[in-house]
Length: 410
Image (cartoon, rainbow, N blue to C red; front, side, top):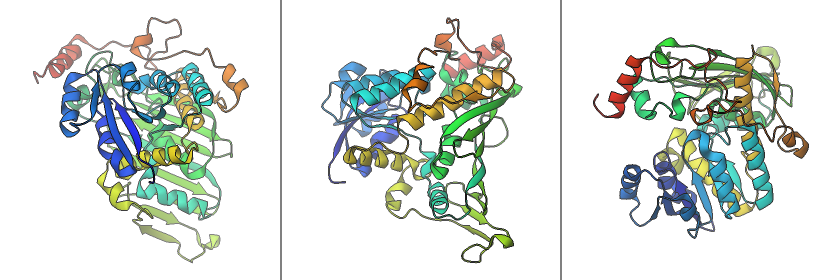
């Protein structure tokens, strides 16, 4: 951490976490931006000496090296491109783009400007997930042929509504496959392969989606993703009303490894059959590893330490002048898995090829693909349904209840 990096954060809600932990990664928080005055007021109580902006373009003019984008899920790519073109490195959370066309534009902006771009996907950096990566790189289970990633996050209806204020809020429209990086990212980080095709199936959970609630998108989706190394990855999420569960498992040619209870952030299990002759002779071990460095800083942050490590790897990439593991191409490819996985759900589980966004010719083939399922795009002819049932509006009762929650009456 030989050079402090001046960073600004766009989005005062989730962005407060990045603002609070920037210093641990050797970055200096110098500016905050959000047009929500209430949210800005809360975050600025902690960061009183930091410059405040309500306008993104004015924010970009602040003297800083990098920008963290923690704004709404489906709005990242246009802001990332503006920041890159203003000479700022970009750390962008959740998903890189909402359409394939945006993904192409984002890749080309990184190439044109030469700035660092990183997806702030935090789940690959828990102590358990990092240990799985280390084990795999050391040949513990041989080559992975099949793996599973699971991220399911149900919640009580009023809690969900408070997270998604407004009938057109992105959380009420996002198909389950789109929010795939928490399940997919750790798998790709471990095996270091690229997705090349996807097919999917979605599921209805009538109790937690329209017409019973304000949420018009489906609640669950399963995707099968094939990689360039021949592995098949099963991806599951998002808000099926069963239990909150995060899980990663890898089946290799010489054994098995995965996260496990009681805490997926910390615990790892490794198993071998006797004929596989593991190096140390141990057939089954269960343990809680630690990071080899900076564990004290990681443990202070959220998401199993991932909130520290995303800042850290972003800062290190800037210092080294080298794009990180979750660079623009891999980030857009993961977004494309969710985008095309949803089309597969809508088209009877048809298999879709994932473009190689590192290749200019492959990008040109999808450069005009603006299809989107989000509310702001419903006027377009290429608007995608947010549910495999099409668009099913919430009932009058569900809308009335939602508005009482949003107005603070309940």
